[in-house]
Image 1 (tube, one colour):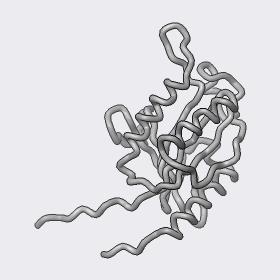
Image 2: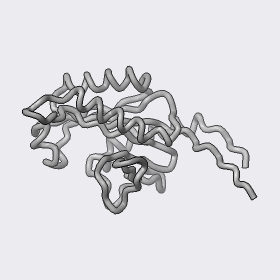
Image 3: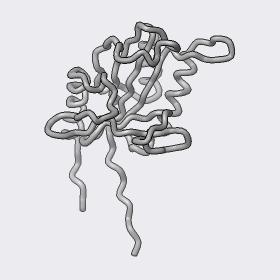
Image 4: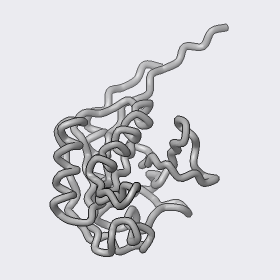
Length: 182
């Protein structure tokens, strides 16, 4: 007996943009808007002092901002978008010898009514392969009126500012949700 596949419900596309200078944050945001469309909303810019992981490549004084785009996307687009953001990181990077060091780190993700999923190139046991060398993880899971962190959730995604940003997106998604035929 054949099984009909249902299309995935469109979700909100977000990008977490971290940069070594305000000008690079603006350049990245402008390029993202040009490629991915207008913004629905954006978080305030906040200092990123949660880890020293990026210091050797990008420096110590990093800023971060979350962007949400107006067009909802098919979740299957996440690998293509991650690959494109990686190319943008290179384009905005600086050459040091034969290497390109990033000035901007861009992590695209998907906000649904149920979760925040982020794309990454780093494998870990809790991440699922979504394309060659690309992985996705559920970073936050909506429970009891909030996007709840999981054991591996990065600290900045656990802040109240990020929580409010995601709840605003969730309300927007709920308002635009169409009933499904079952």
